[in-house]
Image (cartoon, rainbow, N blue to C red; front, side):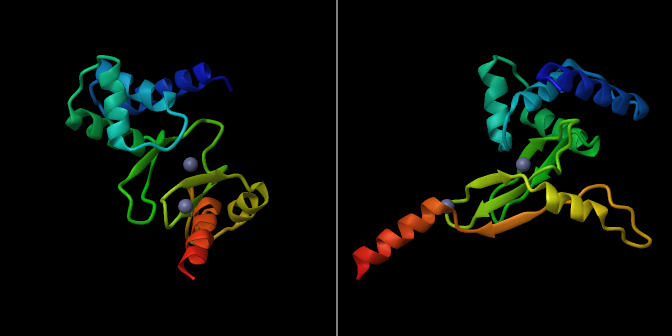
Length: 159
Ligand SMILES: [Zn+2]
Ligand SMILES: [Zn+2]
C-alpha cells in the first residue's frame, strides 16, 4: 500500500472511531494523525510536537497527548516503553505492525526493528483458552554491535 493510501485508510478508521464515540472531528486531530503517519520510525512525543511546530501548526501539548490517547485506543498508534526510556510511539499501518519486533540496546538505548516472519507466525498461531489475542509486543534486550565494539576497546585500554 502507498503512503497516501495508508493515510487515507487511517483517516477513515479515525473518523469512524470518533463518530461512534461522538467525539468532535477537529482539524487538529487530523493534523496530528497525518503527522504521525509521516513518521517513519518510533518517536518521542516531543519530536511530534516540534514537527508540528516546524510546520507552523500550533496545537497545545494537551491536545497532542489527548489525540495520541485516542489514536492508541483506535488501534492506529502503539505506545512502547523500552526499558527505562520515556514512552515512544509508532504508527500502526494497515499492512500490520506486529510484523516486526524490537531489539533494544541496554547501553545506548538504540532500537532496532527486526522482521522474523517465522517467529511471528509461530506466536500468532498460539491459541490460549478463554483468551482472544489482539496483538502482542516482543522486546528483546541486549547490547548492540557498536556498544559491543566500544566495550571491547575500553577493556583493552584499561588493561
Ligand atoms: Zn548500543
Ligand atoms: Zn517498531
